[in-house]
Length: 200
Image 1: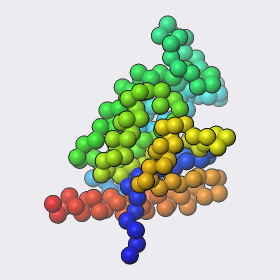
Image 2: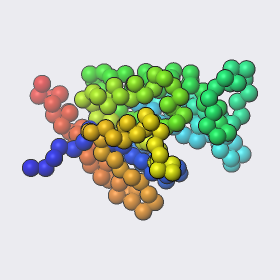
Image 3: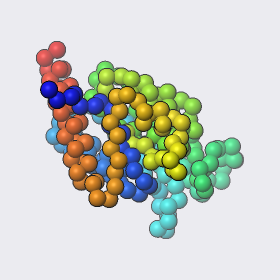
């Protein structure tokens, strides 16, 4: 008898390998094949100016967006903001967009969290919200950074070691295969959830 597919799928890999692209393609494919699904969450994307990366923004799956981090911020409030490299992290903006999307609700079929990384973990409310999602019975597709020098951020290490998590390590050679594998696994889970709803 085959093991039940994991409900917590974590995509990891080096920066720029295509984690966000994979997640969004899986999201689009699931919405096309299962149009009645309720999928909540957010993703992060680069903000570029004159061809250079100037920061990142948070985008909810229903299209709202706001700043996550920027190398150009110079407001009085930003003096107190945490930094990652040259970027100032706008924790309040992250929380206003991401936290409502991570509220566990009965009608939600899938959570997408891109990503659980150093910038996001500056929010004291973010990781507890992630763990509530992971602890629910709702499937989760999330991205996490690859450990640097063999060392994980503590919160990410806890997530990576979660007993119910399946880790998918992305590289330039396996992206298409990984996308198909993840889509198939989630599609199976979504079909099961829709069947349960239909017969309940």
